[in-house]
Image (cartoon, rainbow, N blue to C red; front, side, top):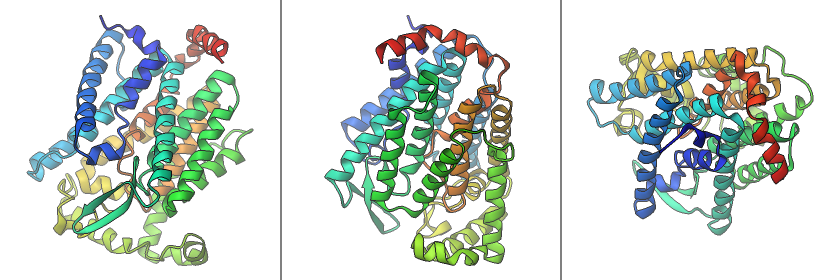
Length: 401
């Protein structure tokens, strides 16, 4: 019979999280592996729901927000836009990851982060292998007649950082929990993430990685200032985006954008899609458009290339509400946390995503909500008991090392 003791097993948490961190390649390629992935997702989703009932604890507020986010997104598409709910797979992944992260934090944080770290390591090194075997791209994707060849196991070159940066955060947290320092294993993950970003030559990914690595190095041995937090990072990102659209603030940094990042000052015609997306949002501000993938909406673009615009376009103000609440609760959690170093790694990661979100929609970043959930749980008064609760696990891990 399934028991909550499974949550204390790192191998179980690895399987439970790896299934929902589905490589982008299997999402596009139909076949036996795709079918197996779907079956495994349904199985572990049901197992997660069963274990949640067995755990007999009040659900995390951010878990409720994640469920609301997926439900509102479904309503916006099926009821408002009267189209098929194309995000069912994404929604199952988000809810399931939140479910296992919530149970993992409440039951055994070390096992959770150990399983997550292993999942991300498998994805990182498998993706690196595909980069070297298929230097020009592993497969081709097409949208509205525009083909993209630069796709590997973790997807298109701009998408990969959304998995790898979350993995770097998990690796740092697990390293500190088990060794009280930054281990060689965590450093290797960060270094090979950097190698991947340099290889695929994604400017947006490079910016996100530089912000992450820069903050990590600057505050490796000292705490983050309180003004650097999850909420403030997103407010700054929204302000910068507004200034780019309204007054063209990017021209003040033309040398860096053009000569260093090799990007146009209109961010590869993103200014056009931003204006188009905003017009579409104003037509249905409460529930959004839902059917934003329809070709006559954004033309050749599959999304509006801004994190908050993407949310507004998918589900309007209604969809924004659970996301904003999740960010507020996560900010409070990290600021109240007794585990300052673990909270610091979470904040650094979320700041990096806020910066990338200025010019990217951050689609396929299914671990964002679970990471916000972990950040919120960091502020729980009984979190310090995890050290006592996990003493046996820590001793076992040290003996194995």
